[in-house]
Length: 167
Image (cartoon, rainbow, N blue to C red; front, side, top):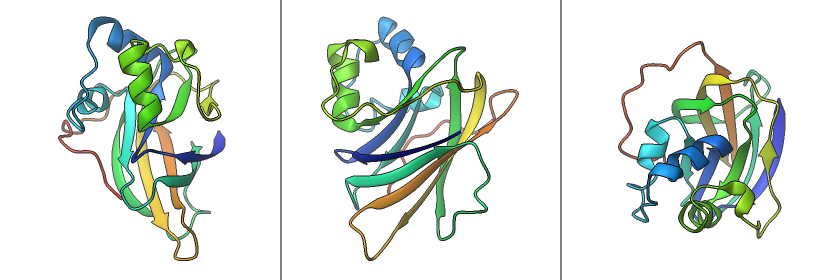
């Protein structure tokens, strides 16, 4: 799998499980406090998040391939990510994420995207480790990021996070 994307993040880039968000917000209320409201979603494997203070414009890729062909990227974080059977994952800006979770109770299908919808489907179900790799090119206003998914048989025993990686 290799999916390229370009996104204005509104300060935070989020990769989200469609089924996971809907299930989580059917029983939980959205917490507007940043980053406290996102951290439980990260710790449950439902969201991958990256604070993009250095650049709100991102060019990136979601891959489940080796990083051998990508030079100059630095590893900024790793976390667990769970993909349900027949799930879809979405690349969202912080403002899109907030609208989906607060106004639509995590139901991505109920949201009218302001920008183009960036979605990946036909993924292997189960746990993956998400590695976030980033670099900033001096000749570009874009932050470049690669979210690499490495599938595992079970959740990796990372400790719970208390902060979101910043670039």
